[in-house]
Length: 338
Image (cartoon, rainbow, N blue to C red; front, side, top):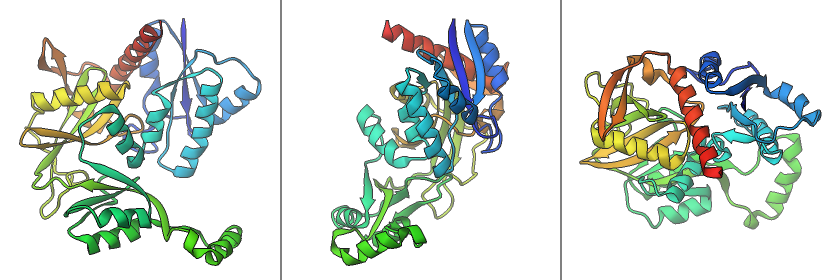
C-alpha cells in the first residue's frame, strides 16, 4: 500500500481554494486516494518537525504539501521540503514546482529548459545588469517583478528612460536600515564601487502588441477548465482585469497547448495564463500549487477523447478530480522508476 502525507500549514490547511485562508477539501482528495490503495495521513509542518526528530523513516513516502505567499514562511517550508528529499521522501509535485510558485524568475528559466513557447524574457538580479539589457533591447518592453498576481508589478516601458525608472522602483536597495545591517552599510559605503546599486529579481520580457485577451486555463489531470479574459481599455494586461467572457469557450488549439504545457511541466495540476495572437500561443505564467480554483465554478470541463475536446458536466467537487490527478501522476512516476 502506498503512503501519502498531506503536509499542511500553520492553520492545518493546504491553500488555496479561493485565497490564502481557504484550503482545499483534503477529505475529498483522501477519499479518491484511499479507494485506490493509498494510506493517507494529514500533518502540520510543525508536528512533522517533531516527527523528523524521532528519526522515523519516510523512505518512499509521498508528500502533497503546502506553499505560501509570504516569502519568509515559504523559506521556512523550503527547509522542511529539502529535509524530506534528503530522507528519501517524494514530493508531489517536485521541489522545482515549489520554487516556481510566486517566482516568475524561476518560471522563465523553467520554460526555457522545458522548451515551452513563451515571450522571450531575461531574468535580472541587479540594477547594473538590468540597465545593460535596457540599453540593447527594442521598445516597448515589459518589466515584471518576480512575485505578484493579477498583473501587479507588471509594467510597460515605451522607451529606455521609462525602463530605467521602472527598473529602479522594482529593485530593492542592497541594505535595510536596522541595527543588524549597520555593519554591512559601513562596508558598502567603504567599498561602494564593489557593490551594485540595487538587488532584486525581475524579468525584462518581450512585449506582444495588440493583444485583446488571454486564456486562464486550469489543467487537472487530463481535464481542462477555464475561459477568456479581456484586456482593459488603454492597457496591455488581461490578468487582473476581471473582464471575463461568459460565452466564449477555449478553442481546440488553446486546450491542446494547455495540456501540452501541463505534460511538459510534469505535475498533477496547473493554472496557466496563455496569450493568443493570430493563432500564436504563448505561456505567460503558470502555477502548479497554491492557486485559486474559482475557475471551476462553472461546473463544466473539457476532456480529450479521440483527439476531440468534449465538454462535460462536473459530477463531483473539484477536489475529487484533483485526487484522481494525484493518483495518476504517482502512477506515472512509479512506472518510470520501474
